[in-house]
Length: 160
Image (cartoon, rainbow, N blue to C red):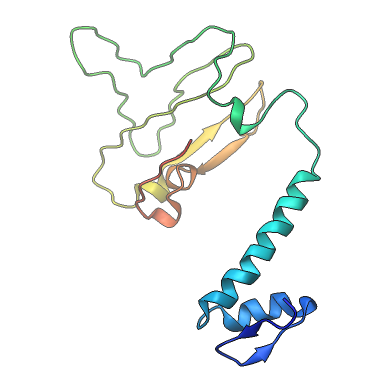
């Protein structure tokens, strides 16, 4: 970055001043920001490459691979093959056990349809998940926060 001029401030920056230059030029100078960001990206790539590698192939590249095991489904309770009415109706203050699973496994999909008149339900409806006979929940959060719609705001979330 020696000799690189930031058009908005007409200053020359040394390599040690790269971070300061990025913050000063971010709002007015696109070329200056891009140069500093590229340097930050290279630094990030170097840092990531020095991290310890996963032991059992737990990388994002393994996400689409099939694994050995048995697929199971736990669904809501009123199962009737003749109808589509398979929902629990949970009254205010009521607690409902959705499923109880035994043995090792992973949860890959959770689907909730919440039909209530209270627009505050993303903050007032609490999801609690217990692992391995624990007496305290491993997950205890408002349902909106769990599904990346924090502070009760509705959001469209697309994830891997």
